[in-house]
Amino acid sequence: MRTQYVLAIVLAALVTVAYFWLQTSQELLVPVTDWLFPSASGILSILAFLVVHKWGFRGKFGIVHLGLFAGFFMYFLGDTIWAIYETILQIEIPYPSPADAIYLASYIPIAIGIVQFLWSFRSGIKRQRSFAALAVGLLFVALICAFLIGPLVVSAEDSLTKTFDVAYPVLDSMLVVLALFMFMLFRGGRMAGSWLWISLGLLLSALADIMFSMGTLQGWYYSGHPIELIYLWGSIGLGLGFVEQRGDQLV
Image (tube, rainbow, N blue to C red; front, side, top):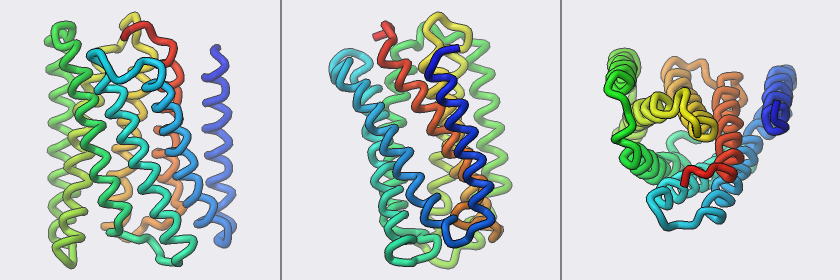
């Protein structure tokens, strides 16, 4: 087993144990978990930047690498603002906030990068896999529309909150569909490693966002809730993808 896989497993286990231990300490739960997020997205930004630094901005994958770096750097900024609001300004669950505007903007470069990536390999995508990815994606979107977007629109108190409430699941659904296409494209392929990890990380990140929306809608979410582990596990998957991407010869 490669060293990075062992480290990833150990890190995932440590984060999981720490999260559940922190549930017993309300004084530490919010500040520790709040600053864990910008730490994770900051590391992702560095790893993504190292990929850009190695392969450059040119070539058909330049936009892909740059888009992923820009997106996760914006995530880092959003996570930092969220942590400042909760731990320094003492605003519990600051939603919506400037952090949310940055989070939503981060979808743009990530989506551009993934679309460019898929377009570069459009001739290699098998029709059966395309239909399977599209079918699963559309089913996911239908479920989100039925069980999340509708109730969010009805429950929102003001137009700004309603806009953010709807934007998150819509953009996450788009991200899920794109990540599924990535997964289907490289599943079992010769250069599958890094892109499979990246697609898995994106899927988990989108799922974490959707769980956050459900939690705020139903009132059971709180800062430091164990569902945040899904996002952190996704970050670990993305980190593995960027580490392996630096060694890929695909570009």
